[in-house]
Image (cartoon, rainbow, N blue to C red; front, side, top):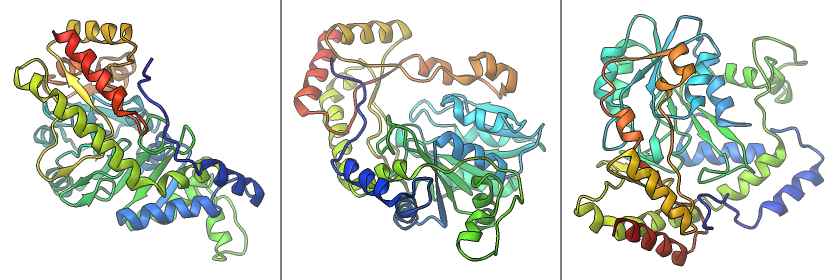
Length: 376
């Protein structure tokens, strides 16, 4: 069976983890935690990066930083992972779901402004498949209405929008280092990216259980104490050691995935030209990171049959999100603004193919041949 995903392994992970163990300092923000944060800040021009145990944790911190309170509203697409909504619901916010664009599966920027009310606190654009949302327009809307932008860039590390790194544009942003992402910190992990300097000091406090511990270790206070709300959002040094080995090979991993994406795209283009299915769209000005390769077929029935056929051929393909607004929790904690023109119907067509660092070209060709066999 060709697996749908395998976590990236570059070869130096064990050595770095052993080094962390030898240091006897495993609770986080030691050598490797600081190296990871510095790498991300310098590579993507981020004012401050804080690595976290997960992207979910980073999103939860973002909700705390913007001061969410019960009754506030947060605008986002329904076609996203549950954490995008859960992180704000847990602070009492109501989620306002907006329809997606048919081409990129990203939030439709032209429908955001009409969804804004006097209760709107933030817009959360999700860069699906590592392809950027239309950030100039989104940032302009946020500025006019004086609301925050929190980029959910869980899938988008190394992607850019008009030359800017995704994660460097909004007030806050998050990365995921889950094993299904391009880079992992050993299975779980994330990062909070802070581009609004007003949030930096409080973010450190929230991450350290509401204490000023970071200031204490920098010698800025003579003792540390409880000063604010917070939680345990600090990853272990072992997680950071694994992640740093990946960051050192970030360009290599990125190039591999982009090459694999291009291989799939070239092979399948003739079927798209015949109207058999649609391939991913990357708008002008956007550079993606090869996070995902998907086909959009004609219907839910075709999708189900294709996935079953590929499984019989030894290929694990999967569908993706079920729109959050159709879920029990989504109906309880949110509402869909306007018409659901594309979110449901497009989500039911999408099939994701195996896409991971280390997938051999012979395996990729086998997958291509199996898809051609199905549509033959």
